[in-house]
Image (cartoon, rainbow, N blue to C red; front, side, top):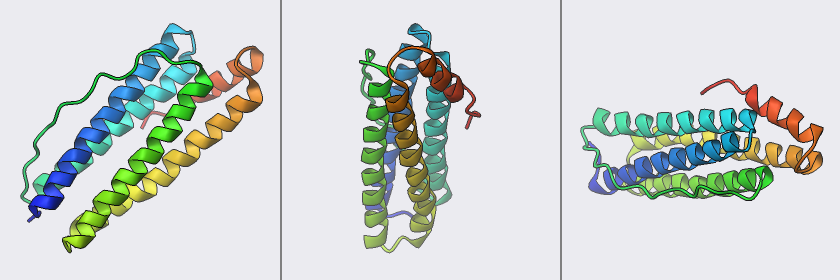
Length: 164
C-alpha cells in the first residue's frame, strides 16, 4: 500500500507528465505552422512518450492499492522564438522534470517504499536519455543555423524519429 505522501507525490508527477505532454504538443503545433514537419513529428513523439509516462505512474498507483486524483494543467505557451529556442526550452524542461523525479524518489526513500523506488529508477534512467537527446539536438541546431538547407536537413533527421 502506498503512503499518503508517496501517493500525493505520484499524483503530482502524473500532472507534471501530462503538463509536459501538453507543452510538447503545443511546440509541435508551432513547428507545423512554420513548415518544420520533422521537428513537429519529433515533438509529437515526445508528447506520446510523456502520456505513456503518466500512465505508467497511474498504473503503479493502482497496482499498489492507491487512488489517482487528477489535477488541473496549465495552458502551454503557443509561440516560440526559433527551433533552437524550442529545443533549449525542451532541455530546460527536461532538467526540471529530472529534479521532480529525483524529489519523488527521495520521498519514496524516506517512506521506505521500495516498490516505488524500483519503479522510479526507470524514470531516472529515462531522464538521462531525455536530457542527452535534447542536448544533442541543440548542438546540431547551433551548427546548422536558423535557416537554410542545413536546417532543413536537421528537420528531416528529426522527422526520422520513431514514435515512442
